[in-house]
Length: 427
Image 1: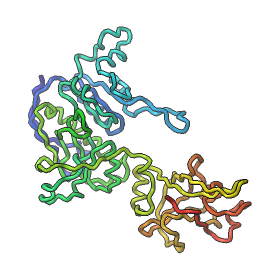
Image 2: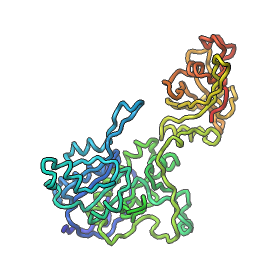
Image 3: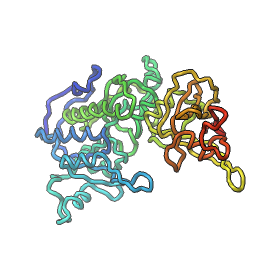
Image 4: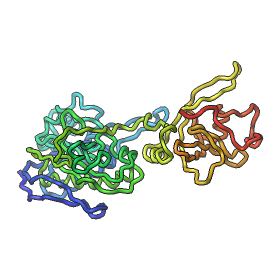
């Protein structure tokens, strides 16, 4: 058993400390040397894995071994011709750690998988690195829920590091203390970094909680960046991840040092003084519906922020195709692959909200102008119609029947006007 000196507070590494703050931890406890099963995927989890491995190599005796679990590589791109590997897999190999790549925990146990991958010559014998069963599971940006069956195999259960100040909303008792509902917005779920930026929150933090056997983000909070979190100026997920990853890794290591993961647990979350029921807003996984641009309610700032955080946005529009059987109307998806920029100069044209016009047809590079619901104008240099490559605005619009161009038109300079509107607004 390890007897570790009492530590009441810790600080993050100075190079990442943007504001003065402390973590809250419980009293130091003793525990067996840890044989960790680490479940991760991205850069946020890589920082924690590297910190754990550094602690293992330091020879403190706290960590006896680390095994890494991640999702298997997936085919990507058009026609699934390329394969993408989870980033943490290469890091685990570089660190010389046993790696298990699985897509489900069904019919899976640590000991069985270890024998299959590490001792193929003698499948009936466990690998020598095991030194006993895993006694702690750590899940950081993993993507799968660790089932109760797996958690029950570990003496100390599981820990989860979350890049948000869990839980999400405060409640009536907290409001009475002067904390508004807006101030208390937090983002449990698989995409907290994205939703923090999409909601334009100016503070963030990290939470270490126990892994609940049933609920996602439903464990006891063992350590947390104190309210109201740390201020940040991040504009992209990568920037926010670069800030929170080392803070989370620091929090995890300090929690292992003081044994806060050993029962009985003490909940140290910012809401622990409040007794009323809590209400959560789920930070759902980003999907196609989140990229579906709504010109009727999104301001120019909303659109540019969403474009920056979650990538290319899209719309549907109606096209008019001339065929042998006459004109045919068809709905097509437009993907704004190269995004928008805000028009700085005054626009003398007055397009309706969400109804694109192609401007500058008599010039060298026609562009798409679209008015937003708050009166601004966004500019796109190119158009990508689904199934095609991104193309200069005039050519894409003419080829796909997005705007009323006469038959036989070869050059936009042949048109009587310098602009033309799409057949229909964007939906």
